[in-house]
Length: 472
Image 1 (tube, rainbow, N blue to C red):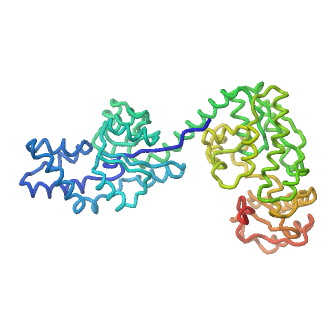
Image 2: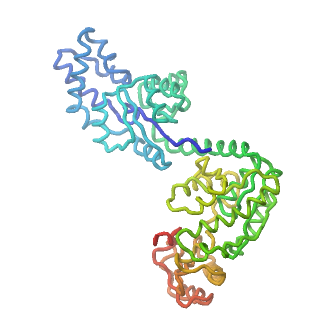
């Protein structure tokens, strides 16, 4: 089961753009041509309904259609240049993109003129639909899979509710808070400036609810548990949803798991009241792992899952669950994920749509000590592709990193990798610590060489997660 993709629809006039100056200028031009003095100041307070309904209050019935056509023809010359984005609009759209969502603009405006506004203001959207109003917007929102619709008018609320989308209203148009609430809106914001924070909170809450529901439906799980932020959070979420009697953790012990990670992982699981299994895994015996090609992680994950699946079955646990998150699923080359999927492992964080940032934020709120734990990939990830993975190589990487961390203690170091490039080591530390004092760097490189490397150097670009993958 996977969470629905994020699709957010926005109204245009008085939601994304301040139509008032353009509407006023065009209406004045139309009135001059027709010899009609439209009450511009009154009409601009009621923007939202179709143009013909506004013109119909001041023209004979048989003149409305032609006047509307003329208004739309005058519009590009009078209304595009003076109309700005409303405050917060750009950040609101960026917030949707940050969450890998699609952006729709669904508006009652004449489509060609709506497009002129978007192009003039540099607004990039995935779909524009014009000349739809009120509940008529529902068909578009449903067809495009919108889960949220943002507007400023009570009729925008009607469209969202008819589509089964969450209605978010902003107070930048003609409808009051009271009117919008009475129409049934779900959320009222002062302006789009409040939208990014609201969206962050909404998605976190929604995805945590989805995670809990998924875990409850699974019934019981054995969590493939490394002690990192993702698997620790998944373990805590499973305990919350299922209780300790239907959850266990399993950490594969092998040469690729740093010794320094083992005790903290056991202590955290113990604090949750969860049994921790520590089976030995033998990925080093798999040729595909030792030869260290681009698909090395496939063989490592295959070994882990082949060991954990019988353990889960033996304890009556219905599923083996990994800590793969939603960012991992779109991060490009991930052979380990393929191995887990092929073996039927579930990935509840990924399926709920939870990103790494959301996992950390939820962990922080739950008081988990792993919320800000730096990423700690397995030791084999330090060995350059094509260089054979051996227990000796893994051991000297671990010795080098242990010595380096001890030497840099108190410096504010968070991320450190000693990359094994053959007989040469490349040391990556947080970019904020670079350049190092000459004497500190010299002692650091001495420590790394002392662990068994013939040569060592500090990477001037600083720590980069997954930097070995750049060679692929």
